Image 1 (cartoon, rainbow, N blue to C red):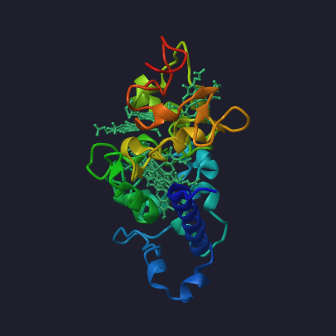
Image 2 (image 1 turned 180 degrees about the vertical axis):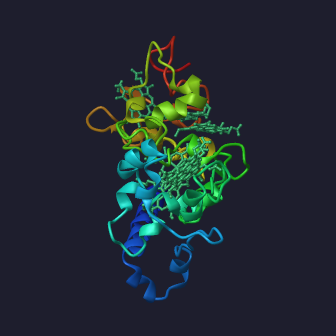
Image 3 (image 1 turned 60 degrees about the horizontal axis):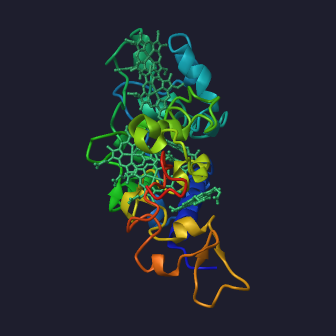
Length: 272
Ligand code: HEC
Ligand code: HEC
Ligand code: HEC
Ligand code: HEC
Ligand code: HEC
Ligand code: HEC
Ligand code: HEC
């Protein structure tokens, strides 16, 4: 096993998320006071004079959102009768709804619309905020794009492969802005079938171009180096071709080699 900081980071990230969930569902855990856990405690939103009423009170006027919500990422967390019920439903993002309903609803009427405000999500997704602070990141903190351009908070797309966390399938989401990389080509790179996140971290990364790995290991995961008779020690043979001297020039896609990693219209070996 080689040392792979990205995999470790991923593992760390996942365990943090699971932890977040546990903290959510088992408030008792919070009693074990621990400095870094404190950041996961979420203050309920406040709207002066309003109280939490639950999702069912929204259904008459926002039928579609309420119907799709149970299958969304946040809806799945909502445990009937849980102590933090008000923190996982509609009101966890929109604030307590009683005054909005008494007033007969309406825009700007006693309800929050987080719109394009990433802080509304960072309240709970602390680890995501960390990812956006990595040296390479999608310009969300800079205000040039936002979470809801990629994620659908209400789960309207629950029948898509991603189970409702994306606006559409994850790769279609990327394609809305990066057409060049996602377009069909005459010589497609089969790796793309596994999705853009096979090679890119969507939020942020320590590597250029948001890559999950900065070097040839990104490609060797699938294009294993050949070993055995005929291959001399120290030689690097990929796809039956001796790559030893090529690789001294840099990564697989730089130095004018496989520059067409997303597929090519003219070269089967993805050289250009
Ligand atoms: C994870 C946070 C989150 C949850 C939970 C959530 N929403 Fe939203 N909601 C948002 C965000 C973010 C927007 C703004 C979307 C945008 O600008 O594209 C929004 C927008 C809206 C709007 C305004 C749409 C418009 O036309 O501008 C309504 C109505 C709404 N939500 C209702 C609901 C209802 C009802 C529920 C529960 C079934 C719910 N939301 C749960 C985050 C959430
Ligand atoms: C009596 C009907 C009614 C109920 C019940 C109701 N709303 Fe609304 N709500 C409205 C109307 C009408 C609008 C304005 C929609 C528009 O202009 O397209 C609105 C707008 C909103 C908006 C957008 C606000 C903005 O400033 O852009 C959000 C968010 C929202 N509602 C959330 C909720 C939530 C959450 C609940 C349940 C706690 C709820 N509503 C219950 C009627 C209602
Ligand atoms: C009140 C707390 C809270 C708020 C606010 C919130 N979330 Fe979440 N969200 C959670 C929890 C808890 C989970 C499940 C645990 C986890 O994966 O971190 C979750 C899960 C998710 C997931 C799916 C994770 C998965 O692995 O399936 C996405 C995507 C997501 N949230 C995006 C958003 C976005 C975008 C916003 C802002 C519009 C937002 N969240 C606001 C609490 C919140
Ligand atoms: C460029 C598109 C994009 C943007 C912008 C984006 N996300 Fe994501 N997000 C993704 C993708 C793709 C995944 C799935 C990652 C995977 O499968 O490895 C994801 C996964 C998640 C998860 C699940 C846990 C994880 O990290 O894998 C959460 C929570 C989340 N996003 C929250 C947010 C929040 C909050 C914002 C805004 C501050 C945001 N995302 C902005 C594309 C995006
Ligand atoms: C709403 C538009 C939008 C969506 C959706 C989007 N991106 Fe981006 N992407 C951008 C912007 C803006 C930049 C920053 C470009 C810059 O700084 O010049 C960027 C940068 C990148 C970069 C780095 C480019 C470079 O030259 O350093 C990669 C890689 C990338 N995105 C991949 C993805 C992937 C994978 C997805 C889907 C999970 C995705 N993007 C979804 C807008 C988007
Ligand atoms: C097999 C790995 C792999 C997959 C899968 C992949 N990319 Fe890339 N991508 C790369 C590499 C490597 C680079 C860096 C190329 C360079 O620096 O010349 C890159 C660069 C980019 C860039 C920066 C602009 C450029 O072309 O240099 C964008 C944007 C991008 N990819 C988007 C996507 C999108 C969208 C998808 C899914 C449709 C995707 N990538 C799938 C490996 C991949
Ligand atoms: C998910 C696995 C996977 C990853 C990761 C991957 N590839 Fe591929 N790649 C494939 C498959 C499958 C094929 C088609 C079968 C073949 O020719 O080996 C392919 C084909 C190719 C080809 C054409 C082979 C030929 O006949 O010349 C090149 C070049 C290539 N990949 C380069 C790369 C580069 C460069 C990277 C890293 C940026 C990379 N691949 C990452 C799976 C992958």
